Image (tube, rainbow, N blue to C red):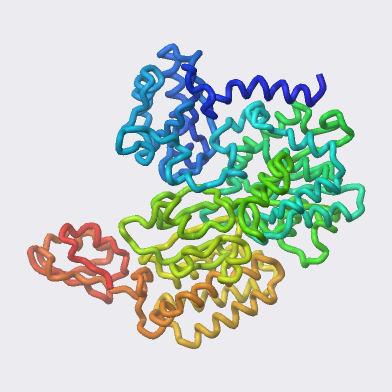
Length: 621
């Protein structure tokens, strides 16, 4: 049996079982119980949920009719732990250990979903049930990079093969290398790691650089605060990255690849290593892949969590065993990269698109997104939003649709204020930009950038000066220190922001911040230093009035900067003394059943007194 025959035979056998998850065997009594075992759900007892399901299935003699499947992230992290039962597509949210016997008895044995345990949005007013992929959170999403996350068992290669896994690799091995690169160029795929450079052009540069040894590197060093896009793909669909890297290796003439992933991602690392081992066992990595002369192998390299190692030259230095610090460019890695050899570096999400482009053609990706930003983009949606999680939308989708249609709006009736997009390298956009399309060029015009895909929503209680300080503080901590503009300049900017948030700023500080920020952008060695001032510049651009209030009025309009706050006890105080007992510095004065007063000189503004007051008499101004 040839390698292709083995692959197709595996696909045929496995797909017969997996059709249940596609709703093609709705009349069959068999069911699949899919349990999210991404990092988020595992932290909420998903492994125990799987164990109890297994015990209940065995106890009720359902082993022949029920298959329990561990999967990666479904995306709707706000409502985890998540269990989905096929073929109905019944979406159980916030599953508790004690819920499982009831689900087994009523649903798996009785055939009726337990409606009071389902995701509320999945149960209609008439009592009918909406399949999970039609609920508002998923309805306008388009899953390409995430297409198999939550659908297949990432620890079972046969399930990936059943969904056309490794067919794209087989296809390219019958193509000329130039034609493979042309297909990627024609698709318009741009790097999803932040800069948005043409993936096909990067591959072409490396292909045209003559050298007997070339390398393919996957950048899985995901360091933005709150970002978990790459981790989730590696946890939920690791084989798509392996296949894509092998395709890239064939296209440029490389026989070796490295996945650089941070050690803080143990589940992703373990599943990726298991997937590599399985691919080798199937003959999909190693020598003579698909009975051709093409050879390709993969290794994992663990990073220590340095944000700067997300910059490609710093990443390469780290793989080589050197300190993770960036190098001047040119030469670019496509010409002189790992160990001085031509190297292409793409991030996880970029690679996740490659097999589908090869199978469906460049026009398929061109049909999604905008003219200059094709395809989809994965975002980690978080902050002040009802439905936080991992989402994937076509390029050009508006911020409004993401925040309100997918995200469900702002909690507690608060007003939308801003969204920080692109992490520490990005910028803040306001409610005036809610209808702005999310694509590479539009965001740059607005003073932000796509970044790797962090998207943090803020409401009226967020102080934008404090937000800028937070991101700049992160950048200062993570600076490698190699170049003075980043090492010294960001430190001076942070000191200025701290003075402003403490009520010690001057109007001249605003001009100094802008001058310093623009100098850092123009003179820093690497892209991380060059984009570090973006959060400050964007908040100065759109929220200058907040800066002025901090400097002139010595007030924080959002009430977030504690140094500018004062706590007061209003006349509704009944003298219960609970606040007085909670104060760690004895700043509250008053006898029982008398109006209490806060000594402003002693008060450290910790806020410990506020939740203790049953009469809500303590306010901050």
